[in-house]
Length: 170
Ligand SMILES: [Fe+2]
Ligand SMILES: [Fe+2]
Image 1 (cartoon, helix red, strand yellow):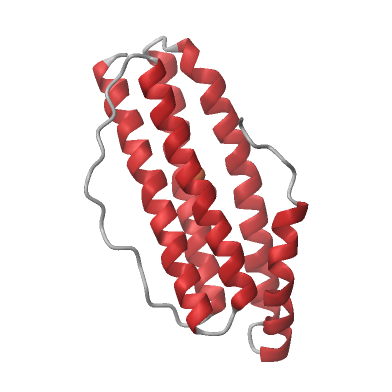
Image 2 (cartoon, protein in one colour):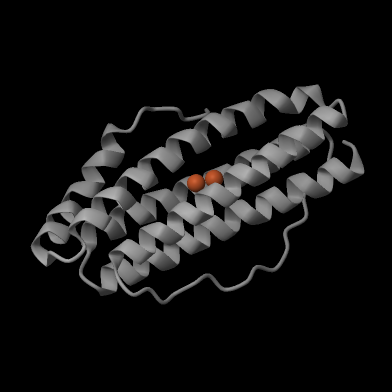
């Protein structure tokens, strides 16, 4: 594998691990504030990000590259309310989408065509993730001043994940 591309893949692995930890920290905040539905949703999201990191790791190894894990910054732990949690999640997802786009461009430039199907799958996955988080943000913006409505939405979130389309890459 091209050395520069390998470095980019390793940076992506770090970003997925950072996303995993960001979601774990958010789920801890949610649970501590009695938003147990959101906590469940965020924890499944964290598990998915860990799986993303492993998919990228497997790909680097399949292409005879070297995987290097790096130290990570502590994720944000303090949020004003549940809306702030999901706004932060949406920002993170957008950042990841941008990074995968850059990776796609770099892989194309390096003529690493065997990497493109994986990256295309990830781009599709990001469209789904951004859309689902963006919907939650929009809904929370409408009800954030009404605690009973926020609790109702919170209770509903775990069910949405079960209904999510099965785009598992296995
Ligand atoms: Fe991810
Ligand atoms: Fe994600």
